Length: 319
Image 1 (spheres, rainbow, N blue to C red):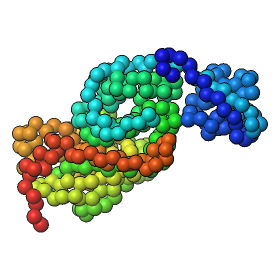
Image 2 (image 1 turned 90 degrees about the vertical axis):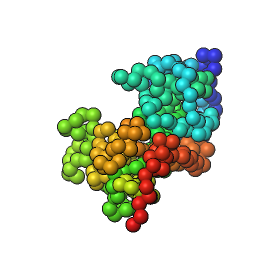
Image 3 (image 1 turned 90 degrees about the horizontal axis):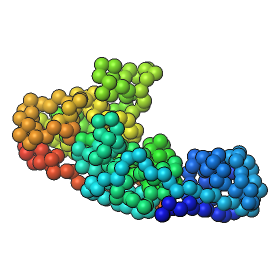
Image 4 (image 1 turned 45 degrees about the vertical axis):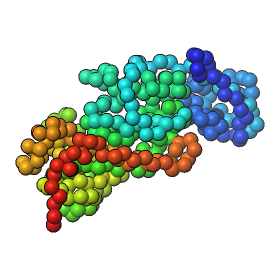
């Protein structure tokens, strides 16, 4: 849909089933997008406009879908440097630095990853729900570094979103926590919801609570350091602040975490000297089934310099 021109997709329906389902299977459009296009009168079957998503045309019927040019997103493109781990016509994987907000919001109207992607992907976005915007299917906190995947098209967005909903995405974080988790490897399973005491924080809720969502983190100690440990956390679910809340809940909050942290006294001086004022958390591994090719792809990101320096500055702990 370059130069603001509409796009027409034509084809033949394979069998007699609901129109929205049949068209979604015959094209790379999501079912939700198909339903919207039918409602807007942009779908013809055997040359006649069809306005019912539940219509069941006969197998062999021809179809034509006219897709209007995607309207411009409200956020504006900005030339912000990006570290691109992978990119094709369907999606892009970004290695995000700490300090970069993912999505515009109150307090951060611009200067975000979305603004950067609108510039980087200009002319490549086929429209998410009819809007020329990157499809954000998951986020990582502003002060967390590492990998995240963004869709460029409706079909890629739907495919990735389904995998996140099914918890089939392979997401592994590296973190520096205070002290040494006991046991050194285990699983934390709780309900996580908004804190009653501080609305900016999430909290572990009573297991019988009707609020919040089930959250599961699998952790293992990678290396024991002086008064802290490097751990790997594999997310089975993806709740807001999940790793930070779960580590704090077992008494081993992440170093530098301004919301949930309680840095061991011997390390406070080091963090101050290094001006380390963020949670020591890095999204190191991201693996998923490519939503279009259906091949499994996996990406890795090295620890950023600030976390690496913290590790190098601490003495190795000998049992």
